[in-house]
Length: 517
Image 1 (tube, one colour):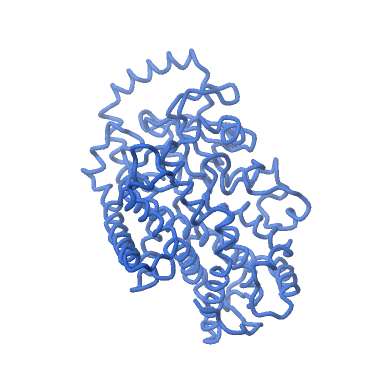
Image 2: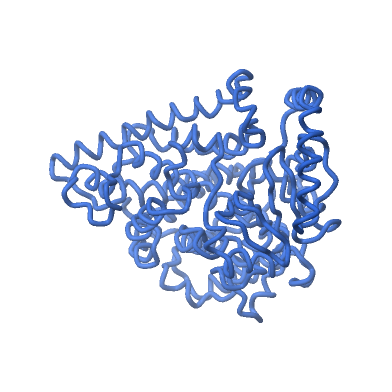
């Protein structure tokens, strides 16, 4: 993220104060750079480097820079060398050929403060602890077999969402789809991670509020991330305050979750969900065969894993579902084809069941096209090189940060015809997929750090979208045209719409009874 205007003033002051030191460092590095071949770099400012060129939507800014300087660029974000990748070929070299070298994550200030030192899954450095957390989350929430076992849960949550939309539709008012879809995505991951008991006491509403704050906090500018020697400025200027406040609120919610599950487990009520599993690992110190030697899960680590699962699971699913509704309303011919397919296979039933999705080829093409145009994390989560290496003949030093612009790759005319247009038909005639083997299409990444929630997210997206078009005809509020729809994105790690989405839902199928929740 780019710094605020106030921080820009401070950056300029830093330039003036540290300029003599910069001259010494620059002359030394210039001499060294003649001996090694580094990737091409855009022109940069003294000391602050290329920070001002990032913009509020970095994936847009970096695509524009790549068009001028090539698909492999070395940016200097303050004192941090950052490799930017904007082509499928180079992405494949990093995420497959040299995947192990680039399998780690950088340490970011906001993540450390707000999310338990990054002890979840997404931002954990590569190593034994990351492997353990990934294994636990795959076995008990995100793995293909576990995702399939959540089939009935998904159908229940989708039925409940249909009921909420029907109530708004009956009142003849536009539906706040941002609110409905956010609530649905949060309920899905909360139930998978913590079970039905999580819903009590308005906890879901508070959790959604915290998750809404997460993208802005995670992308907030901190001096330490770019100028390690100026870390003291973060505390002096109050830049840590937002992350600290978010942490305290997260910690309060998660402490209640752990206490509630602990009380239930003492009473013999065990749901076999992720929270119960993590707590049993913590409590049974003699039965931790999955843990690395001389390690055990602490309560803080459990909270880190849970905060990661709740926030990432909600935010990414919600963002793509919202874009799904935008695109089908903007493209009525797509909505008509999708409805014809779904309604033909549903054959008069009031709810699409999960076993029927496999026959819906156009639905799957629509989902793929959504992920191509609107990847949930446009700049894949940053990687960090663990050793010196070579990419495309260029030297990449150890501890170089790496940003892979999945959004730009998915819109590259080298790989896609009419890349800016929403054309699901393109996926009816090819086998390109998003599971990490086709590097022109990597909305979930690839390699060791591929998004572990891919199966969960896609299953949720397909079932929700099929039922939304089965049950309702969708229109814009009166007086609004498709051309007037705001397509602006909000700044942050994920690809959210900037404006809330309100649509008119016209019911066309009566739902035969809501499933028990």
